[in-house]
Image 1: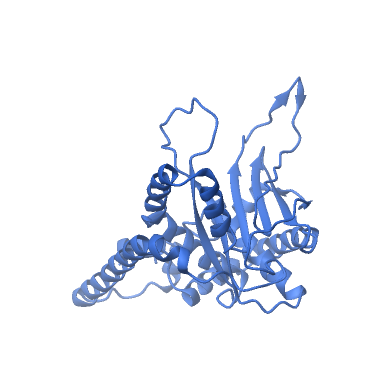
Image 2: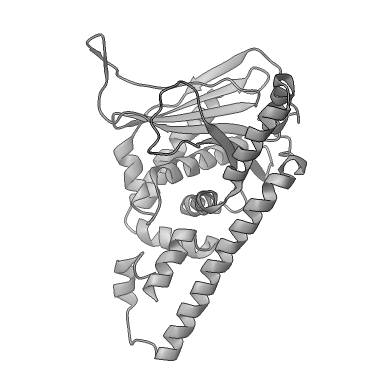
Length: 318
């Protein structure tokens, strides 16, 4: 904890505990770390087997039916762009967090506000996303993706405050990074692609997507201006059309972040969700960068339980 919050550690430092107390703290924290990791490993092996049999998300204004969206008409909306530097100001208030953690938490906050304004009492939803399975050193010579899907669960009852939401989402992202689940799913789908016909694979894909409320993606674009035909590209955004009720695509380009939303025509206009995105970002930024914001973030962590990186730093600190 001292390594994560050095200022707080300096303020609360006092007489050093005895050797037995230090050893006990180190042993108990190390046991908690390895217990957490082994739990992630075991569940990561089990979940791919039981995933198709888990219940779908509860019906909501964004997911009225437990079946793929059949409409050929989609409605598009885009939130106002936000500064990447301001996103990083939020990130810096949460030690160990990344820009992706903050943007994922921002989506959770926007969805919470959206459901509250719609008077929808849904307590939890799942948001699926694609992970790039290419090796970072691999030279890409052909077009096409090599991805596999995982998901985050947004439990709105856990999101007692905006800082708590960032920690809750970060804890799940840490779990995804440590779990073997995606690798197992990727290998299993590769095997199924040789055993099933194209129509069967399409059915399986649509069936699995229909279990979730939303699909999201987050792409890091060029962080300097691009030019096309001698003209500077001012903004970039993208939309994806999939058989799931709502899609959110986040893209950073040249110091700006855009969020695009796509919904099925049978669902409410996604412009309301785009509006909630901007409102929640301004509120989150104001809350965590205000005087006392760092203390609020620290208090929120105590309330939701430690994330993996917090565990690792605690082992070094004791």
